[in-house]
Length: 411
Image 1 (cartoon, rainbow, N blue to C red):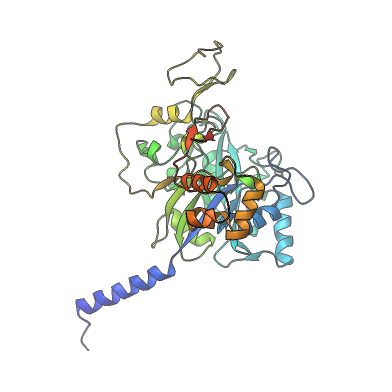
Image 2: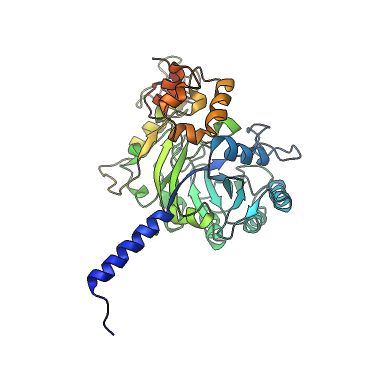
């Protein structure tokens, strides 16, 4: 029997590739959302809103935000684990065979934010770990409770080495991501000392890097040791409204843990195809400022020029310049699209927002699929224009710093 000629094989290959392409879809994901309180009212993220409960997060993500995948990073808390199990028994959550939990139109990826302060680092570092099932999340929670004073709270310090945490996450089939890596407090690079990623972590056990609200892909292109990793951008939401202020668009075959893992490693056509985030100027740690009076300072200032205080909060922009070198990341990165969240837009109040949601369904629909002309049918022309400028990053911005967000201004 004759083997098919190379042209026939090539034709079959092209057909297969086209069939594969039709199976891919775009999914919007915010992988860093906190829980403020449990169903019983117990605090999880103390600084989080009391309305930021598991049930309300899921409802908001699915019905209003239009997020296809969310990472809730306080799922290690025993009461949260119990709530997820209860929702499964009630039929409100469904465990997926490829990992993750389905709620209406949204997939929940159980996660945990952990504070590492081991012998190799100069200060607390926050990291994110994600797992495919509740059972695996519970196993990780039980393991962490041996090294943590209060397993019920969010972002608690773990008393073991960072590499030990990584190893446990990998052993359980999880994902490990250093969080908001440039912010001045509780981050890998934010302390202002010239620490290297390899001093704290095993670089082979990192699945992605979370940039944080005051940075973007272009700003970090000269940091060589980050070249190997996919960048993610997330909200770090402490309230329902802040969900999806930063997120990414993923190319996947389905919304589940396995597909997310492949996307972070750019395997078999899965990928992060766009990052959507605040213009870094809006980030609350972008600019160097005086901790005492809040005056914005230059990168070289070691003394406040206004109140003479020595307490300076180094901005993310300054810190990134310190870490950069004469090197350009040649990896082809997805576009980083500066987008102002709808709740940042002056004049767009809760009632007007409800009208938009009633008309168009979700925020993702408003931001990505609705024309300006369609918006003008629901809200005044001025607001419709501002929404259009917001979703393309064209609004005028007042720079943020020192823990104070920048502001969107009327032109």
